[in-house]
Length: 240
Length: 240
Image: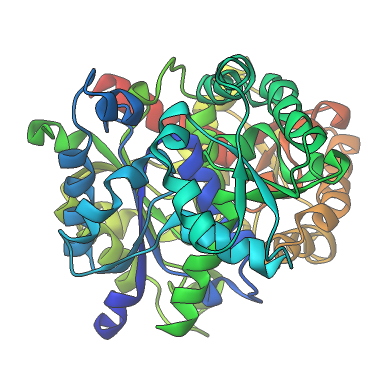
């Protein structure tokens, strides 16, 4: 019979931002789990609500506020028995403090997960190139955490971000991940040429544009915010 | 603000059987959706509970009964506001009648979804080769539905199923999908050589072993039970 005492060990995933990013998060969570049978994987509730209003527009005040929708998802997952929340959307972390203050559940932080992953890869200092939505980058979400941990951060120019990075994100959201490879790789190359020691794919659409097999050819360490968050979730699961 | 009247239009996915199959179901559901923004995708709650006991062992009476665990997932999704349930596991459909009788929600049927997909592909008669777990195949789950719809079904020999089909499923569950390609493709080839007009990947691990890109080279129509169920879910979403 179902073990009700186990309920609090379900991982809750606040997803749908976008829906492909959260679906791929589930794939990567499973692939990164060291398991020899179904029964050793992480019990997970994915609340995939693609109706959550656009985060950049909400942050700019030009679109609906996504926060009540995110909180609605968290409440559903609380009732379903989640013990911690992962949010596979970087821009959504602009509401992290507000969300974490609204629930007693542990909320994993995607930026801190990425920094843990940088360290896990042996990169403990240096210049870290950042890719993400214009909203994530202009908010300083990554820069503050990186600088607090002794890294320097570097960005592309605004016109380059719009032309290549935003374009790659847009194509993934249109289910055209293959077409997104070139603009995403171009961003990584620009950052590499300008001296980045690693590049963070700081939008959960970007790992879909530049999948794991395309990364070794980039000539620079690439840190994937989906994988980093999945690894943080696995750490929570094993520690809980 | 979240539209509570929309709650019943969430798709509920009873997953974790296995966890990779339900994660890939989420990816395929998203990829098969014709959407030009996040907000046009299907709101979905995935209950991924890999603790659900092994279905073949449960059916044979040699392992714990998975039914109470499946029902537990359905109850959680009912409370969270799901309007229909999809179960991306073929063998779990041995408990379909029992589960459908236990909930007022519509429960999509993976075998009927596969037959709809055969027809969608223009295959309205002929000999249909079946791959799946020994439990699914010996139960007649597919054979009964196919014969009721005017198809003939054909199977591999028991030793071939064990050596190639069960092996491909086992490797996917070990996160070794690449190694699963050869045994899965061998099954399809044996069925093709013996006159199959189409082959059904009637276990949700098999589409991971033989991914879409590997199918055109098989020389026979391959019907994917994950995609078929995702298409049925999209039909429900658009009709509801």
